[in-house]
Amino acid sequence: MRYLKFALRGLAYLAAFFLLYVAAILVYGTWTDFQPEGTQTLAPIQAASSTDLPDSLISLAIWNIGYAGLGEESDFFYDGGGFLFSGGKMIRTERPLVEKNLAGIVHFAKTTKADIFLFQEVDFSSKRSYFTNHVDSIGKALPAFGSWYSVNYLVDRVPVPLMEPWRAYGKANSGLLTLSRFQPAAAERVQLPGKYPWPNRMFQLDRCAAVFRYPLKNGKELVVLNIHNAAHDKGGKIKAQQMQFLRAFFLEEYEQKGNFVIAGGDWNQCPPFFPFDTFMPEQAKGFSQINIDPEFLPAEWRWIYDPTIPSNRKINKPFRKGDSFVTIIDFFLVSPNVAVQQVKTLNQDFRFSDHQPVWMEVVLSF
View (cartoon, rainbow, N blue to C red):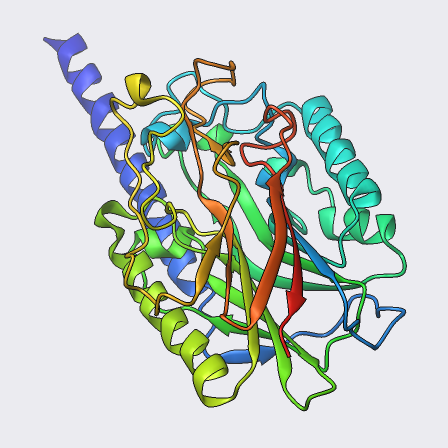
């Protein structure tokens, strides 16, 4: 009986300690919660060497680099709903693999012929990537390009998996990185609507669009947006709010101002009419992906992607070609006055990220 009392007392102490730990997380998370609002000017990290946008071809590349931590060798605990336990999956990829992935990302930036790069999930100072400054590493690879960083994930301590505090995800400082051969007249961070319920929202991304305005010779502007919509969004409710906000933005720029609009990035949803299981319908069980509403914008607007190569793989396990589920959620949107010459997804077999780069070439129709 005495041993039972000791055991019960020990369990009571453990329960009290755990509750105190959770309470401390919630208090600290609430106190330090990053809550950006509205529109903020983005200061350039480095300036572009050219100020004039060409009248001829303009090329763009998009890539969610997965914070250099989600290469082909990686799985990810949270992708399977690992809020409490990691379940043996990776919380952080080993440092040598992060360095390998970052080297591949920098090589891509150096060797890809593009005038504008739109990167997502770029770490500035995060525990998950061993506090490596990806913004600096990629920017140095393109010294003639201007670069702008737009934070969308700023948390002092992400506590998951909750039951493994000694392995917690930790500090996150990450966002959108845009590099441009041409200096825009304005660069802004625009906060997107939609929030997760408390307390989850304290440890989630605060989604935004990075907006860049380039003056044109006809008095109008080319407006380029770097996009990364909500993920882990059951039912797509937050994405729906973000998309309605973006729709109003797109239509105002084109219909009311007569501007040229290009938006690209990780939309975390499939293009209109594209079946999410196109590449492997026999292995779609357990996976789902919503589509953008075909009537989201007037028919003259175009969703631009390469339908032959997937841009995203699921990270419930390390990548194996033909076994890992793949789909397309990374693509461009262009207004009717932008003529697309070509688009292609660069097939890397997901060596450096759980996403693959997409490249596009356009001409503005004056």
